[in-house]
Image (cartoon, rainbow, N blue to C red; front, side, top):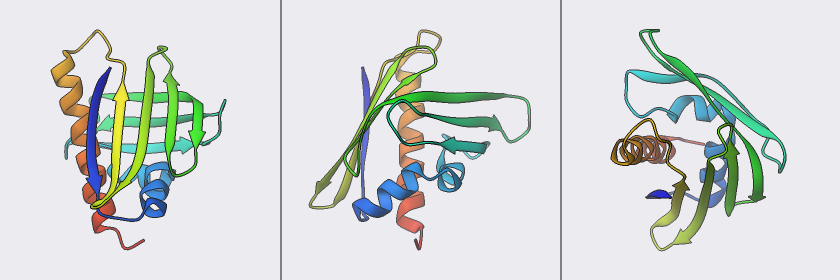
Length: 136
């Protein structure tokens, strides 16, 4: 598995809400400024699914990122399986500086592991900025 992480200076309630609410996911779920998430839905329950449409802002590329939840522990853990059967685990831990988000995922075979790690880390870094600048 590949692991990325960051510590967010915010409460667990705020981190959890902004990570899981579709209207917020659409504002932070991109690895670079030339991409965005124009659609997001999320039913955060075991056996239910999420689906995020990720697209280039110039309209030349788009794909759906989706999965089915296999484990959800409020304010602590989210696990899911993607459509291609790869698994993802996200742990939310309190520490002295805020909430540490640790995201581990099975790599796909199309892109290098370094490219995948950099992309997922960029999205997590964008999430940190969004949460820390949000007035929620």
